[in-house]
Length: 213
Image (cartoon, rainbow, N blue to C red; front, side, top):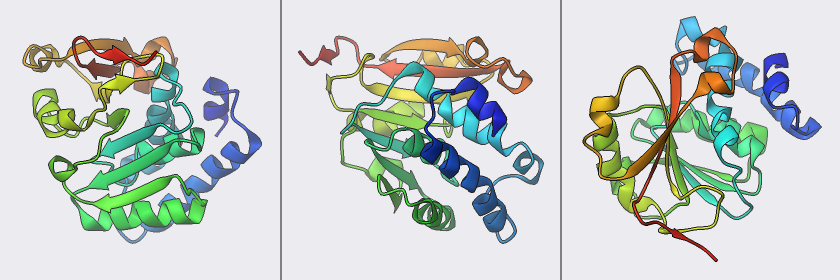
């Protein structure tokens, strides 16, 4: 947890407590099903919690905002973000039922009233959200085709509504196939840790988006 406090010194005691509780809950679940890979569970806070929270370095979710986490797996990035933004609604979806059962249990045990966990394929969703977040579940053109329809057009944040995609490696070819505008941020500019050297956050947003007055 010290590494979380290092990069997010403004967390409240309540938020720190919730983040501290997470590891035991996930270790409990990991003893039953493989929610987080065995090699990653010992790096839980760096590779999962801190990685998820880097999204908060790009946007401060406003009270009343709505965020969809697609392919959430065991609840990342959605669960850490929900702890950091308690007045924002988070909908976490995955097509694998046992993973959503884990997410629902984690949210319940942490007392996160701003989280909904749904067993549904992303392309079947018909709600609209301010932002859609994910950790590289599919190539960007495929992902955009799935969920582009679910982004609200009118924006009221410091950045345009859109997709916030945590991704690593080289994906220039993927970006050449998408019709939306985008901005790429190297996570190493925010987080000075070896794991983040090749990690990026891609913000995809519609051309000619509308900013709310």
